[in-house]
Image (cartoon, rainbow, N blue to C red; front, side, top):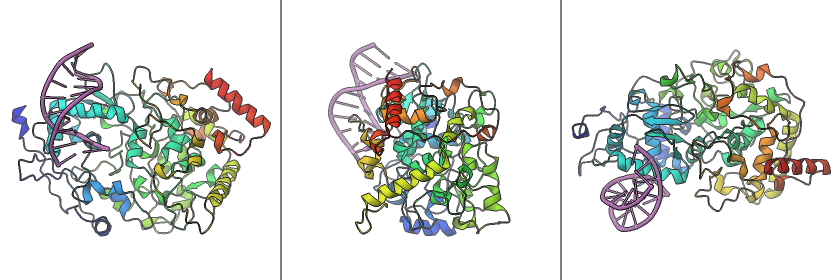
Length: 508
DNA sequence: CTCGGAACGC
DNA sequence: GCGTTCCGAG
């Protein structure tokens, strides 16, 4: 151990220093495809050379016009005194780099990773934080600290094995993603064993981004101006979230899992947060690149124009199609920044479960969209300045928060989604939808219209055969989804009855 | 090995 | 707020 303590780490040159103001950084990144490296040298004493806070700057988003990013996106690397790198982020960083697979790697279930060499991980962490006396005991204490925050939990019975709560991680990293209101993410939460599937409907996707900065281009994430109604017509405005773009092919499994883990669907992570993707978590959501090339891909012309269409993904039908967006296009004509179609690597859900997605008809979606617009208009009449520029769940109006049902006094975060307080891998299967009837209602929606049906754990389902799950499905006639109670306008009696029945089913 | 309390620093 | 350090307990 002690010999490793001062072992020379991969030496790194920060080819261009990141300690700039965000503006300068933006400008810089716009014109400079500098390759960044991360210095893991252990610092010593007063002459701390650490660049510990250089972790993965939010490069991809910065240069895109019209996008405002939350403060957190800049803090770690932009200003001295800003909060430092967080351990979980560091862990993710290690996890995404193949060179560290020997000491820490994804393994097992969703988001699960194992620290193969605790001492080494601790050493690296200590190096990063300029804490030469760091050890696994201390590091693990910090990890345990995350239990309460529900960012991590321990995989019981497995040594050095922890598991990420993706939803939480995503929320922490992308507070503008309103996962708390998203049926997609509510259903996605594998962390605590949710067995439901996400609502992949355009509306669900929209719900992830209810408060994107209104740049005057319209607030909907789905551009319906040129598309006919229908699933194929709802086009996600990916140009709104360039930080979710990848512009490159994505791994569907971690390198270490390319072999035997057939049980893991190769696509189960929403919004490109597949932990098995290189750079899955946020800031350098980019394809695996040669060592030392952490960021450039987003700035390069997309070499795989058809990468999305190749993805076996239920979203693919929602995204600008290759035909629509790329035919005859070499860039610049589809309205996306930089002239390149922004690619969103959205691993799809285990296929058969997606059937419910089709439940939500486009016309209904459009109608609900219009309703929301009306609500917004009422809530913020022109001139009141009530605006839609807010970012983050904290600015949600009460009526937006799942009808006010979310309230969790125990929550340690306004980004809380579900109660994971007893989330262990031992009993992962029964907590998610206890939180409130609205959750349950939402989950009901996606259950193929069968009230009270219970989905098996995802892990128990056969892997999806079709690489294009939705394409193998027959559309179901649209059926109005139920809503969070207090969000709903007065329901007609039969709808109320349905809600009641649903609740009964849930409570039983 | 794991857990969490407590004091403490930044 | 986010660890870091220490430590006793299971």
